Amino acid sequence: LIGATLFEGWAETPDQAEALLDRGEITVDPCHHHGAVGPMAGVLAPSMPVFVATDPSDGRLAFASLNEGLGKVLRFGAFDDEVITRLSWMRDVLGPILDRALEAFGPIDITSLIGQALSMGDEGHNRNVAATSLLTRRLAPTIAAMEPSSDAIAVLEFLAGNDHFALNVSMASAKLSMDAAVGMENSTLVTAMARNGVEFGLRVAGSGAEWFTTTVGPADGLFFPGHGPDDANPDLGDSAITETLGLGGFAMAASPAITQFVGGNPDDAIAATKSMRRITLGPHPAFPLPPINFAGTPSGIDVCQVLDTGVLPLINTGIAHKLAGVGQIGAGIVTAPPEVFLQAARSLANRRGIS
View 1 (cartoon, one colour):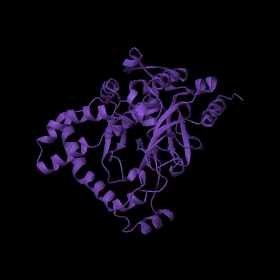
View 2 (cartoon, one colour; view 1 turned 90 degrees about the horizontal axis):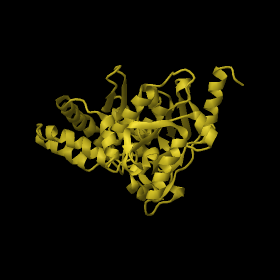
View 3 (cartoon, helix red, strand yellow; view 1 turned 30 degrees about the vertical axis):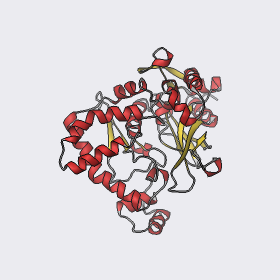
View 4 (cartoon, helix red, strand yellow; view 1 turned 180 degrees about the vertical axis):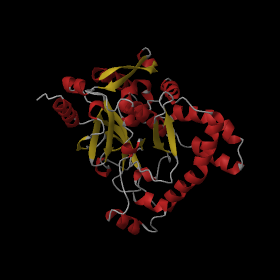
């Protein structure tokens, strides 16, 4: 929030920014309340460019921030001059060039792109090498022909050096997909899972915009050299919207390589995906997974099935350092807490007059 305030020019120093926020002079609201999502700290400010996902059947929209890459970035709490300079470049150069490239290329079918990436070793959350490559491949010829050429080259270098760039595209697509079910009467389908470093929140189709929350826990995973559990911030971010759709922890069978990043082995990845079948409504027809005979990713978390089986949704996640600006210090797996599913079931039962 301090970084976003500095980026917008509402304050000149971090202390001024913090004072503005403490006094409530800057309105803060969850991204989900505005049809948007952002990974980790997930801050979206008015001047930031966003990806826009559109449902051509009804015109609905969903939004996500542009991915900054790894290291010292805003979503990990950094807000020094390097971070603000990069955000300004993304606003002034990257965003407009991507906008022009998409206008020239035309709409990109993100569902199809994700499906292709799953067959190339991505799982749609912590591994996005294939999706980023596929996205860049579509846009690169148009970008390369743009003027000034120095800006075009800088954009292509940025895309080539950021393996996670397509994550935010997938997040916008997942948000759009899940919001289609919001407000479906009596439905126990989970439409959102999110964490903010303090609480874990769950939304269910039949409860509309209501959140069911509990204290968020730490991630269990692998840490980069020099770091350990004592350095970790509690889990945070909107990126669990990917698991809500059936990606990430639900699609680990597609990505044996991801186990080197989050822990475990390829057999564990396949077992994880198969276990998620017990709590979902069915396979996603657009996301077949080659390692399990092209069965679709388990999709559509059902509150009742979670409570009946005791199986909790698996979420692949990055691990952020508890000190702002240090950045990512590892990656791992968390499970959604059971309390929020019990709260959701009770709420839906109360709506129907069931005690």
